[in-house]
Image 1 (cartoon, rainbow, N blue to C red):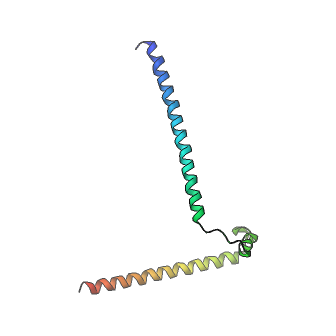
Image 2 (cartoon, rainbow, N blue to C red; image 1 turned 45 degrees about the vertical axis):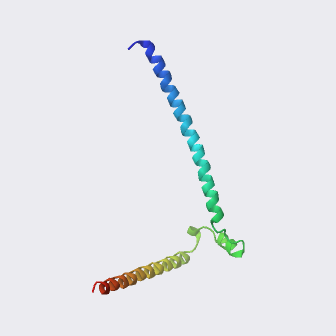
Image 3 (tube, rainbow, N blue to C red; image 1 turned 90 degrees about the horizontal axis):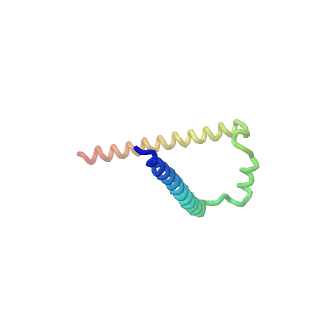
Length: 106
């Protein structure tokens, strides 16, 4: 291949790289605007925190890791009790469904 052919090939490659970079940047900017609009729409529909004293008390308590262990253990025990209630409810729903199928097939 003659040496002069490499010059147009190199220029073509550089032009394609620049055009591709511009294309990617423009699409990234458009995607950022679209995501911003979605975020604005979601935040408009999400409930806002109360402006009363309840919201101020939560902020006054400080971060979770700085609170006493008794609060953490209370939250853990409440979450575990909720978990057990959900499991029991699911088990009862399965029993009802199986009983319904058992009588349906007879």
